[in-house]
Length: 238
Ligand code: UDP
Image (cartoon, rainbow, N blue to C red; front, side):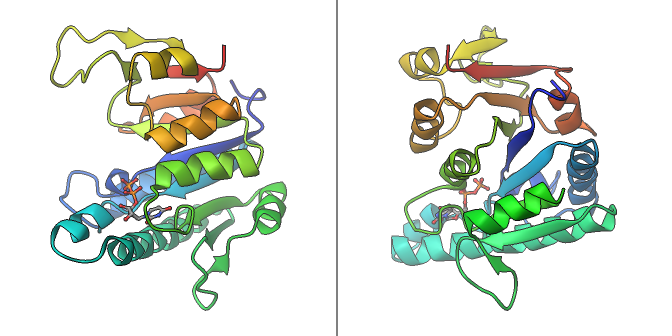
């Protein structure tokens, strides 16, 4: 797929950064992912990343413990900023320039997100790491990824998961789950397949953005998928 996808949006969950541990950041895992992102960018692909925060905090968990949902989501958004800063550092340590931009303004720590700034960094070959999701409570970073992919005219959303594609059921629970090599947005919705959360998926569908669903476990998973190699499901408009 190299050459086909000029600009991509990679969605990483916070959990992807914690490796086999139970929370927080796992240095070797962050380094492995950063290496992969740096390689993709140095190969000439414009790479934007939206990072989640579930390895530190999710709003819904806080709300369950009595924190107002909007306030708990603010804590969740702050968690994504921690991950973005760690990733920015790790990518730069690979010798590839990177910039963390936050949808929640905190200019003493990183640049506030603006479309122009992000496009400018991408044009200069910097990996853009987007924190804060959409910048408002009651959203997720999946939706942030789909929104920014649309805003930044990304050719592809790369949704990193724990399995190698989209299945008819959870393959970890159902041994008969069918794996799709390719499926349309419409069919995924009709079959109620959980590719991304509903708001995110609706945005991707409305803007006809393909989604590659792939497993992040192995080194160079991102660059391998970008070359059209390895196993992934491609969700396509038609
Ligand atoms: N969040 C939010 N608005 C957004 C994106 C995220 O309020 O636009 C909060 C929300 O509380 C969420 C947390 O940040 O639970 C972490 O994001 P997410 O759950 O998407 O992270 P992931 O599951 O990808 O690690």
